[in-house]
Amino acid sequence: MVRICVSDIGQWQGQQVNLCGWIERIRRLGQVNFFMLRDRTGRVQVVVKSDTLDHGRFTNESVIAVKGLVHAEERALGGFEVHAESVQLINRAEPLPLSINNPTIQASLDTQLNHRSVSLRHTRIQPIFRIQAALVHGFQRFLDGEGFTQVFSPKLVASGTEGGTELFSLPYFEQRAYLAQSPQFYKQMLVGAGYERVYEVGPVYRAERHDTARHLNEYISLDLEMGFIRDEHDIMDLQERLLHSMLASAAQESSPALQQLQVELPEVSKIPRIPLSEAADLLKRRFHYAGQHGDLDPKGERLLSQYAAEELQSDFLFVTDYPQAKRPMYTMPKAGGTTASFDLLFRGMEITTGGQRIHDGGQLQAALEQRGFDPQGFQHYLEAFRFGMPPHGGLAIGLERLTALLCGCRNIREAALFPRDRHRLTP
Image (cartoon, rainbow, N blue to C red; front, side, top):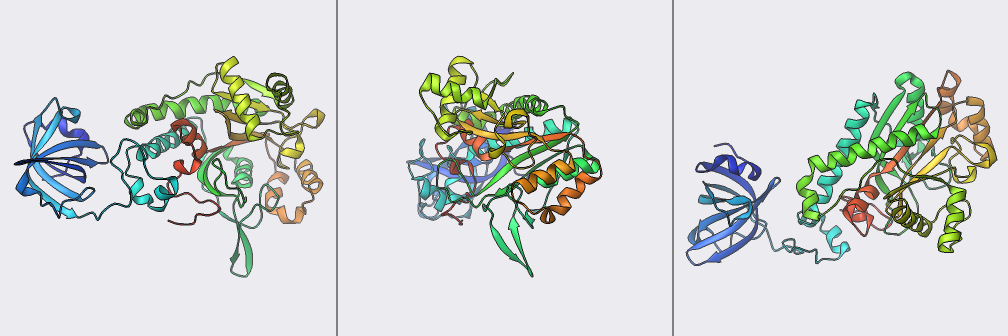
């Protein structure tokens, strides 16, 4: 007999079914026992004679197979229950290192992460990653529809894209290699190679010695790059439509998960835009906060998001025109020492960095030299600009940050399946 999933129970009323899953909890009442069976699609109550469930063998989180009849029962979860004819123990669970069957999470974050294969079963944790998967699907589907090609760039590289020393190095045969900080160079090279529009979903690595609730040393970056743009506003316009699609995908694909976490998705329409210089003046005028010169620090991001929510009725805010010193060397400069760049703030935190890139090879080489880089180390990158590069730009979204903010997580590690930070390399 073919296994069916819990979500399809209603189609089998009065018929015999085979179910497989985990025992979430057992309730023993004299001659009859009840237990909740959980699979990837949901939960269903199973009724079984007491002599069928041996007290020592059937434990919470044991994996079982059930054969039984489906009955309508309005008092049961989902309106149906299964009256078991047989219960097979497939794999007995040992005592759990943390409780996963409480409505709230009682274990510390460290305990959750130390026992991740167990904590991911919790009803307040597992839905996070179903929502995250739906966001990625929305990202991919929207860009596929806009004529983008999904690409997969190397994660072992010969040099960094952002400059500085925030690189993980490792031996690579007789050479020294680094873990990629970003697929930026490859995205630009592929635009120049004639693909025009490319995107990637993949890990990036930052060897920053931070230890905060908003940073990871390995995270998933949602990157895109597109050619033949007019300026950075074309990229921001695209992101508005992209976010709308991603959130619509989450609403459609992960509705049960959103309900479990009581998540209300924000509306995305026209996102307000404010130059950094005006944002700095606003922070001083409204909040009496000077902040970081030429940039935004975490407090400045929170205050600007508060302003956007209160005065502009928006959970999102684009901050534009960052100074050249605060942007990578490939960013297109503008008059007055600023750049054609932006950050997107969402509920108090930056989730996107993007902008227009330099497309003239000579200008790009001069920008490298001005930052103290030797162009000889960037020849493969620069070559793409010698043979015809269109005006282009792009962005990168931090997946874990976006997920954490949507789901109300206090720490970004809660939105990473197996997070990697300064102190954690396992599991």
